[in-house]
Figure 1 (tube, helix red, strand yellow):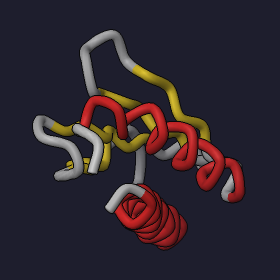
Figure 2: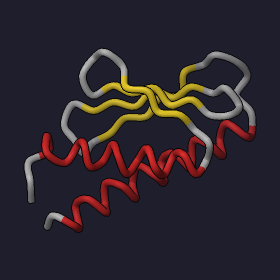
Figure 3: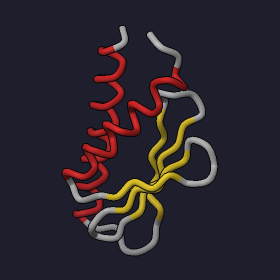
Figure 4: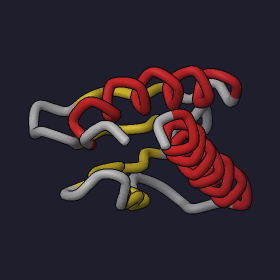
Amino acid sequence: MKIASNLIPEFEKLFREKLQLNNCRLRKKRQENNYEITTPAKDIFLMSWCEFPEITLIYQPVGIRTDQTIVYERAIRSHMNFCVSSIQNAHS
């Protein structure tokens, strides 16, 4: 399997494609391995990692957390897991 630094661009590309299915936007932050995900409901999630593929996803409380927020969070986590699995399977 390739080293993690080579897998990150592949993950980012696939993850961005998956998020577009839910009309979510992925924005890379200035700090390395930090991203901001914005949902159509204006929810914001922060995604980061120290050791890829151990990814952390945190809800950024900017408003009221609704049932829709939970749906988006589940979809984002599902996309993360799918993308990591797909990349690992392709390179193992």
